[in-house]
Length: 165
Image (cartoon, rainbow, N blue to C red; front, side, top):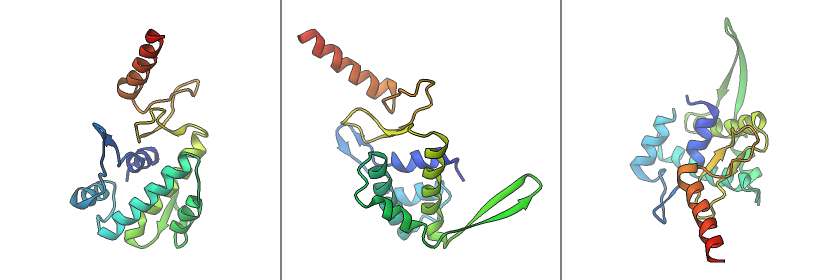
């Protein structure tokens, strides 16, 4: 299974805008393959649940809520985490039906990320971008999903506006 941050950003960023066109990496066989690469079953039901969770998480991260918190809570309604002692410490086992395991893991990953990095999970500041980031910069001021792409574009636009004035 992927680390929490990788899994969360993988899902949040699975619907990028590519050259101005919205895409969805969770559509069709590609979506099933992607779910399997994250440790899921790749079933159509699982992918549908992932798309629903992605929408709810994107809404919450953008600060809109609109019932999205209820949607996320509903994902965990039947989930049970049970501790198991191992020589390496406590391991928490997630008990849910197979098609719900990955989507429940994503919601738990979101909780883990916002707890470990409070205020640092955010949408890219480029309004034409649909990507998300976890800000690991020391001052906590990162704005763009990629400095090379969105950061450069936004700085170029700001420079062009100043030059026109």
